[in-house]
Length: 68
Image (cartoon, rainbow, N blue to C red; front, top):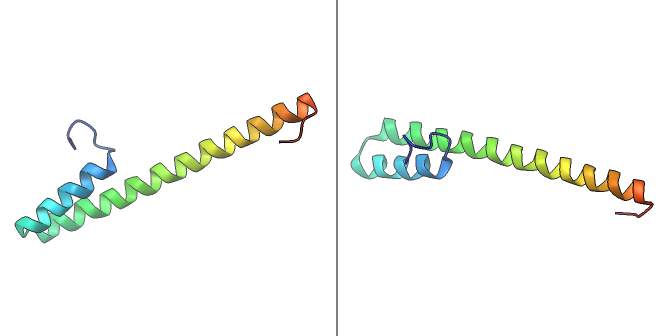
């Protein structure tokens, strides 16, 4: 899954768990750190979209004379 979707945080997280169970501590740390980094990016992107949508609905409401 990681090869098909390299930005899929959950796949990196589970790969990290697998490496940990296999005793490969270095690979486990690498994958879980990458998962954390990707998850933060995803959450930041979601916040931006929500702000844009909120701003868009506020603009439309203002144009229509309706309070959001």
